Length: 266
Image (tube, rainbow, N blue to C red; front, side, top):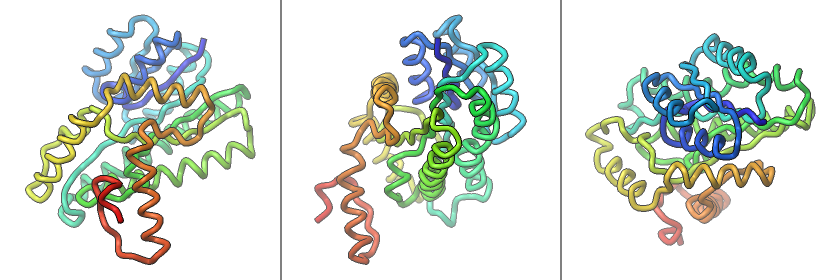
């Protein structure tokens, strides 16, 4: 029986991934700092789930998560480094605390997870897969979301580096980059700043109108894992046309522009 470890599992994408994993007969280790949310998801999943309150910004907390996962199940087959936060506002007006939180959770949270689990995965010398959650925002920068865009760009680079490192050391340990588009989660639950109120409203409306449910999204993610995909982009229509347009602008040395949909790009 396979075992999946999932950070950010108390809600949203992480909870959806956990439910899909259990539906596929896996054991799951749920990690999040939201104890109440974590316990709720674990109760829904029953004895297949182990809930571990975890702060991904703490190396000691991730090490403890790995200890508990291996003590409970003896192996890890899938590691989802999924915890993430989002803040909106003008880049110079966002507080230092919010900037630091974005880097600590979105980037260092993954690094801490790798430090805790990769040595154990290498020692086990058996097939496993690490899935790091970036975003379409890791390819398409957005105004009023600078900490999120910057950290998700970093996750894209980090994950490609990791994939090449592990391919050299042990190709049994595979890596995937997960780039969600609109998914109906509570990531926009933080109250917007005055500068980003309209943008915040537009993004929330887009999620409500076009977003996948976390359960639908998780099904697409696991289908990609079954195929052995590195690039997991469950909603390619939200990325590829805009990425092509962005690359054209870069190649032609044009000024950066922000677009909402492919048809707005000439």
